Amino acid sequence: MTEPEPEPMYITSQKGKKTRILTPSEYDRFVNAWRKPDHVTIFETLFYTGLRFEEAKRLHKHPEWVEWVRNVIHLPQEAQRKKRRRQLERYVQIAPQVKSRLIIFFQLEHIPTLAKWDEAMKRNAARAGFDPTGFSAKTTRKTIESWMIVAGIPLTQICLWQGHTDLTSLRHYQNLAFTKEEREEIRKRLEGWW
Image 1 (spheres, one colour):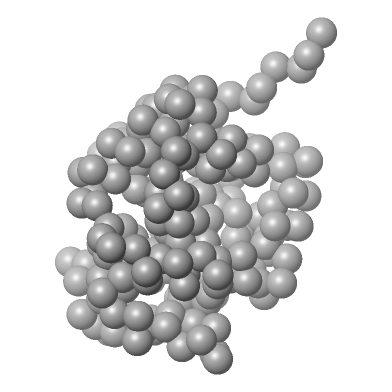
Image 2 (image 1 turned 60 degrees about the vertical axis):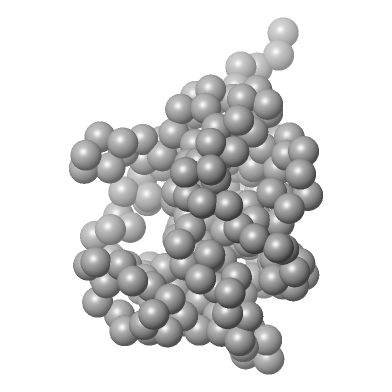
Protein backbone atom coordinates (compact mmCIF):
# COMPACT_ATOMS: atom_id res chain seq x y z
CA MET A 1 0.00 0.00 0.00
CA THR A 2 1.37 3.42 -0.96
CA GLU A 3 1.51 6.25 1.51
CA PRO A 4 -1.11 8.97 0.85
CA GLU A 5 0.03 12.36 -0.38
CA PRO A 6 0.06 15.12 2.25
CA GLU A 7 -2.80 17.58 2.23
CA PRO A 8 -2.21 20.73 0.14
CA MET A 9 -0.85 23.77 1.99
CA TYR A 10 -2.37 27.22 1.72
CA ILE A 11 -1.76 30.64 3.16
CA THR A 12 -4.99 32.53 3.73
CA SER A 13 -5.06 36.33 3.46
CA GLN A 14 -6.91 38.60 5.87
CA LYS A 15 -9.68 38.76 3.27
CA GLY A 16 -9.94 34.96 3.26
CA LYS A 17 -8.30 34.35 -0.12
CA LYS A 18 -6.22 31.15 -0.28
CA THR A 19 -2.84 30.92 -1.98
CA ARG A 20 -1.41 27.48 -2.70
CA ILE A 21 2.09 26.75 -1.37
CA LEU A 22 4.04 24.10 -3.27
CA THR A 23 6.29 21.42 -1.86
CA PRO A 24 9.39 20.47 -3.90
CA SER A 25 7.71 17.43 -5.48
CA GLU A 26 4.58 19.49 -6.28
CA TYR A 27 6.81 22.16 -7.82
CA ASP A 28 8.38 19.53 -10.10
CA ARG A 29 4.99 18.11 -11.07
CA PHE A 30 3.66 21.59 -11.78
CA VAL A 31 6.65 22.66 -13.90
CA ASN A 32 6.60 19.41 -15.89
CA ALA A 33 2.91 19.90 -16.74
CA TRP A 34 3.42 23.18 -18.63
CA ARG A 35 2.97 22.74 -22.38
CA LYS A 36 4.53 26.04 -23.44
CA PRO A 37 8.25 26.60 -22.79
CA ASP A 38 7.53 30.35 -22.45
CA HIS A 39 5.25 29.59 -19.51
CA VAL A 40 7.98 27.56 -17.81
CA THR A 41 10.34 30.52 -18.23
CA ILE A 42 7.81 32.96 -16.75
CA PHE A 43 6.92 30.59 -13.91
CA GLU A 44 10.52 29.89 -12.91
CA THR A 45 11.48 33.56 -13.20
CA LEU A 46 8.59 34.52 -10.93
CA PHE A 47 9.38 31.68 -8.55
CA TYR A 48 13.12 32.15 -8.09
CA THR A 49 13.01 35.96 -8.01
CA GLY A 50 9.92 36.16 -5.80
CA LEU A 51 8.82 39.21 -7.75
CA ARG A 52 5.22 40.33 -7.75
CA PHE A 53 3.67 39.65 -11.17
CA GLU A 54 3.47 43.34 -12.14
CA GLU A 55 7.09 43.88 -11.06
CA ALA A 56 8.14 41.03 -13.37
CA LYS A 57 6.18 42.58 -16.25
CA ARG A 58 8.00 45.88 -15.71
CA LEU A 59 11.34 44.09 -15.39
CA HIS A 60 10.70 42.41 -18.75
CA LYS A 61 10.70 45.87 -20.35
CA HIS A 62 13.82 46.95 -18.43
CA PRO A 63 16.62 44.38 -18.64
CA GLU A 64 18.99 47.16 -17.57
CA TRP A 65 17.64 46.69 -14.02
CA VAL A 66 19.65 43.47 -13.77
CA GLU A 67 23.16 43.87 -12.37
CA TRP A 68 24.68 40.62 -13.62
CA VAL A 69 28.08 41.03 -11.94
CA ARG A 70 26.51 41.73 -8.54
CA ASN A 71 23.85 39.03 -9.06
CA VAL A 72 20.95 41.33 -8.22
CA ILE A 73 17.90 42.89 -9.77
CA HIS A 74 17.67 46.55 -8.86
CA LEU A 75 14.01 47.57 -8.69
CA PRO A 76 13.81 51.35 -8.74
CA GLN A 77 10.80 53.21 -7.40
CA GLU A 78 8.90 52.98 -10.73
CA ALA A 79 9.23 49.18 -10.77
CA GLN A 80 7.24 48.68 -7.59
CA ARG A 81 4.18 50.94 -7.64
CA LYS A 82 2.61 49.19 -4.69
CA LYS A 83 0.20 51.39 -2.74
CA ARG A 84 1.59 50.58 0.69
CA ARG A 85 5.22 50.35 -0.46
CA ARG A 86 7.67 51.95 1.95
CA GLN A 87 10.95 51.05 0.26
CA LEU A 88 11.82 53.53 -2.48
CA GLU A 89 13.93 50.92 -4.22
CA ARG A 90 15.03 47.40 -3.52
CA TYR A 91 17.54 44.79 -4.58
CA VAL A 92 16.50 41.21 -5.26
CA GLN A 93 19.11 38.48 -5.11
CA ILE A 94 19.40 36.46 -8.34
CA ALA A 95 19.42 32.81 -7.40
CA PRO A 96 21.85 30.61 -9.34
CA GLN A 97 18.81 28.50 -10.33
CA VAL A 98 17.24 31.33 -12.34
CA LYS A 99 20.19 33.08 -13.97
CA SER A 100 19.94 31.27 -17.32
CA ARG A 101 16.10 31.46 -17.22
CA LEU A 102 16.31 35.22 -16.76
CA ILE A 103 18.26 35.57 -20.00
CA ILE A 104 15.49 33.67 -21.84
CA PHE A 105 12.84 35.73 -19.98
CA PHE A 106 14.14 38.92 -21.61
CA GLN A 107 13.89 37.30 -25.05
CA LEU A 108 10.16 36.55 -24.68
CA GLU A 109 7.95 38.64 -26.95
CA HIS A 110 5.46 39.51 -24.24
CA ILE A 111 4.21 38.61 -20.79
CA PRO A 112 0.47 37.91 -20.43
CA THR A 113 -1.84 40.02 -18.30
CA LEU A 114 -2.28 39.10 -14.65
CA ALA A 115 -5.77 37.70 -15.37
CA LYS A 116 -4.46 35.53 -18.22
CA TRP A 117 -1.56 34.30 -16.09
CA ASP A 118 -3.90 33.38 -13.22
CA GLU A 119 -6.02 31.39 -15.71
CA ALA A 120 -2.90 29.66 -17.05
CA MET A 121 -1.81 28.78 -13.50
CA LYS A 122 -5.19 27.18 -12.75
CA ARG A 123 -5.25 25.29 -16.08
CA ASN A 124 -1.75 23.97 -15.50
CA ALA A 125 -2.59 22.97 -11.93
CA ALA A 126 -5.49 20.87 -13.24
CA ARG A 127 -3.23 19.41 -15.95
CA ALA A 128 -0.72 18.43 -13.24
CA GLY A 129 -3.48 16.67 -11.29
CA PHE A 130 -3.98 19.31 -8.59
CA ASP A 131 -7.15 20.93 -7.36
CA PRO A 132 -6.68 24.42 -8.91
CA THR A 133 -7.93 26.17 -5.74
CA GLY A 134 -5.41 28.75 -4.60
CA PHE A 135 -3.23 28.65 -7.72
CA SER A 136 -2.50 32.17 -8.97
CA ALA A 137 0.38 34.52 -9.68
CA LYS A 138 0.86 34.74 -5.90
CA THR A 139 1.68 31.02 -5.66
CA THR A 140 5.26 31.55 -6.84
CA ARG A 141 6.02 34.45 -4.51
CA LYS A 142 4.42 32.91 -1.43
CA THR A 143 6.04 29.52 -2.08
CA ILE A 144 9.57 30.87 -2.52
CA GLU A 145 9.20 33.03 0.59
CA SER A 146 8.22 29.95 2.61
CA TRP A 147 11.12 27.99 1.09
CA MET A 148 13.58 30.78 1.98
CA ILE A 149 12.47 30.60 5.60
CA VAL A 150 12.91 26.82 5.63
CA ALA A 151 16.37 27.24 4.05
CA GLY A 152 17.43 29.46 6.96
CA ILE A 153 17.75 32.77 5.12
CA PRO A 154 17.37 35.48 7.79
CA LEU A 155 13.89 37.02 7.93
CA THR A 156 15.30 40.54 7.68
CA GLN A 157 17.05 39.64 4.42
CA ILE A 158 13.90 38.04 3.00
CA CYS A 159 11.92 41.18 3.90
CA LEU A 160 14.42 43.37 2.09
CA TRP A 161 14.52 41.18 -1.05
CA GLN A 162 10.76 40.74 -1.17
CA GLY A 163 9.82 44.31 -0.31
CA HIS A 164 7.95 43.55 2.91
CA THR A 165 7.73 46.39 5.37
CA ASP A 166 8.00 44.30 8.51
CA LEU A 167 8.74 40.83 9.79
CA THR A 168 5.12 40.28 10.80
CA SER A 169 4.15 39.77 7.17
CA LEU A 170 6.40 36.68 7.04
CA ARG A 171 5.60 35.15 10.42
CA HIS A 172 2.78 32.91 9.13
CA TYR A 173 5.26 31.18 6.76
CA GLN A 174 7.19 29.84 9.74
CA ASN A 175 4.32 27.59 10.72
CA LEU A 176 3.86 25.74 7.42
CA ALA A 177 3.77 21.98 7.81
CA PHE A 178 6.51 20.83 5.45
CA THR A 179 7.63 17.28 6.18
CA LYS A 180 11.21 16.59 7.29
CA GLU A 181 12.02 15.26 3.80
CA GLU A 182 10.52 18.34 2.13
CA ARG A 183 12.53 20.64 4.41
CA GLU A 184 15.75 18.79 3.52
CA GLU A 185 14.92 19.00 -0.21
CA ILE A 186 14.15 22.72 0.04
CA ARG A 187 17.51 23.35 1.73
CA LYS A 188 19.29 21.43 -1.06
CA ARG A 189 17.46 23.36 -3.78
CA LEU A 190 18.26 26.75 -2.29
CA GLU A 191 21.85 25.89 -1.44
CA GLY A 192 24.27 28.51 -2.71
CA TRP A 193 21.76 31.35 -2.42
CA TRP A 194 23.00 32.68 0.86
